[in-house]
Picture 1 (cartoon, one colour):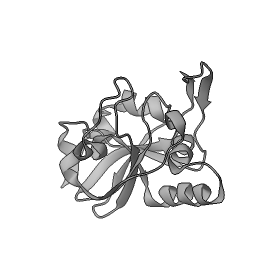
Picture 2: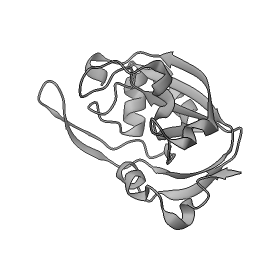
Picture 3: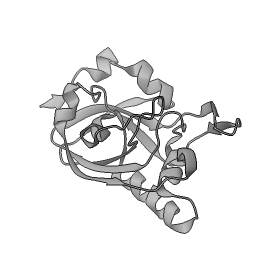
Picture 4: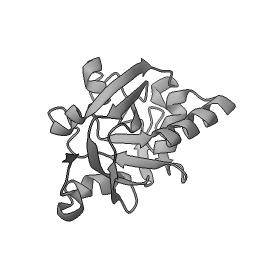
Length: 172
């Protein structure tokens, strides 16, 4: 069974996928494939803690090869892992603290949108400066429709590991 079987013809959530990536294309990820996600332990708008059973429920993921690129660049620099991941995936500080690393594998074949991240403009930082994040040109992002809090697609992944990681002050 393939999850999101009509994605190529119905373009479910294409507008959401297009907000985070350039020219998203539909790809079928096979059952067993390992995927990764960076998430937040708190809601950026309210400061409220997010329960750990909700961390993996976001739609934005990356493949293992791209995760390894992020890890290698993290190891060679002086920035926190959350900060490096934020830069790679073009995730504004107002969206996520990027202080959780999640590893999961797919239980079913899943049709997803895949593409290079699109530049995210003008997030205002606590010091009043604006941040623009272009994302890394060699990292592909995965958008999995139906992964929200009550999404049915969430049942098609198995979380292997969730780990709170470091992030710099204010999550950037």
